[in-house]
Length: 323
Image (tube, rainbow, N blue to C red; front, side):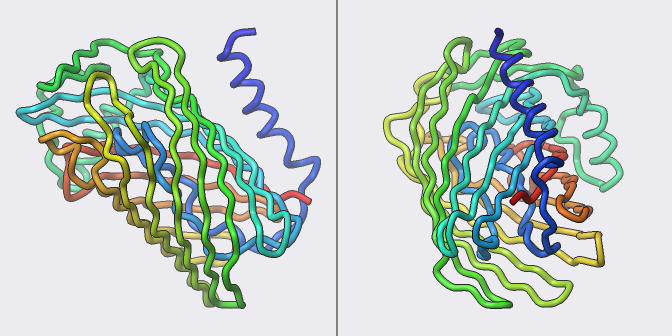
């Protein structure tokens, strides 16, 4: 059986399983949007996920699946990047005691034409953003060039990440309005062949704080990731550590949640160009609450530094609470 078939069977199982084991849950249990970093350097390695500071009920599980389509455009004197990347992610979060939580996640990221170039141009025009040279280049390409020696052309169909992430969280404090938790991640990415072949093992620590009052939900995370002797594509080294923080606000009306988030990521590459600088993403999300599950749609847009982060990305996710 091919690796693609195995991945699709796994994701199909994750989609179909919740109906058999679902349990009723309160709408406030879902926390921030479940969206991974989309900036090219950060999404290729371990970046702490913005998480809720609240625990689930003892024994409760959350099964989740998401699909993301993203478009990267960056043009400077040092490098040129114009490509698509797409991510399928699935996992299970389990509150196995009042204080302890385990979250196991699998992520497959690959390059394939998702036809977002036209959508991106329209979206930027609608908001009055500069196209930053995108309109002068042919659409639907997958290529990366840099003065550091990267020369990748037409890598559509290549696997970028094949990653497993295990997160263990501990609840430090919780009452009706405030939640504070701490956690650590172990991450292993293995790509056997192709231009993005790699094997890397990384770790992260993070602190999560949340506040909720009636319709208003606020979440925040401060995290740091660690790696050693890792490189990307050529001899460009990663920094040994990188900081991040994330902020999330949700306004909830009955079964509808409107969310806005800001994610800030410290630069992770040891270069003299913009990839050594911080990247920033703003997320606009809509969540529809079902009795025991939720559907999320998110738009991710870069800001402040347009040349080291994904131009635009869209995520559709499904999350279900289980016994």
